[in-house]
Length: 378
Image 1 (tube, one colour):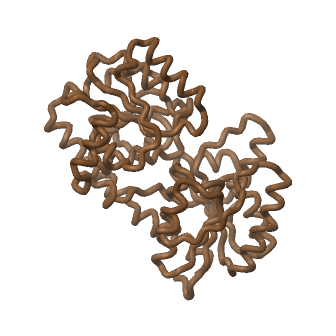
Image 2 (cartoon, one colour):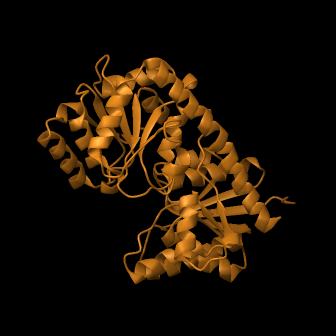
Image 3 (tube, one colour):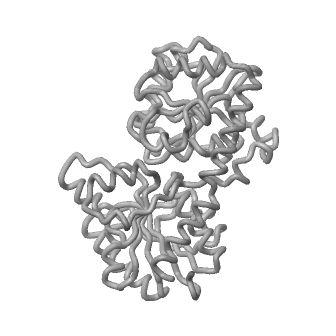
């Protein structure tokens, strides 16, 4: 139990679109609604206004830098922020800001918490050292049991410090009953989907490991050649990769069946019009937020059989798992779903929504973070 209002400071590189950024905002909202003060230090981005609407106070700091000198400078700035605002706890969500936050917290004598959002490659000794700060918190949050096991295998850390807190989905926002038809109709027109054409969605920023090439190859192998594939997500400046995807679709003869939608604000509407939602990352996902959002919208999800997907999908009950990097298996699963009876598909989606409501609600996630803070501050 926290006996008086506290000030919680979260740090991350930039308030732009992404799973970790959403978690930061959702934690900030919970802190604010619980009667405490919520600060976020980051560079301004697409989600800044959403954060302020949720009750967070924003502090614009250049925390995306990986320059050692600037990280040291950010440490000094964070120390000043902690002192000026009487910050009680600092919570880091990314590596570069975590180094500044770790040093500032140590010097100011306040608890330091981290959330380990990714798998973080460790191809060199320097990268391993750089990643190590994410396991240096007095509490280290793993976004899945998969990530918890990875942390234990990499670092000499007391397992009692680790807390598994899955990401949560807002079941009011991601509710098929709350999305009016005109919102989906607008996207149908924008994406040029003809009446009766199945829509298969792959949400996620355009980057190679998210599996967009595999998705395009699977579209080309499908029997249901009328199906349209929609890639949702920004390329974040990786324009060469976008052109490679368009060229691959042209080469495989399916450019007329592929849509690159870019960033989409109204994800519930986008998911509502989907027949199938896909997560086909070529490397293990730490969690896979798009999976639970699609399940909340009562959609059938097909995901790669590794990483956090094991925890969000019960095969043939709340989704389908396919072998990694197998375009033929992905295409066959798409075809089998589209061959199925519509009533069975609806029932399958309803089971998926029920499952995600029981295990991955936003309220559960927020409560667990507040309880974690209470462990250190109560």
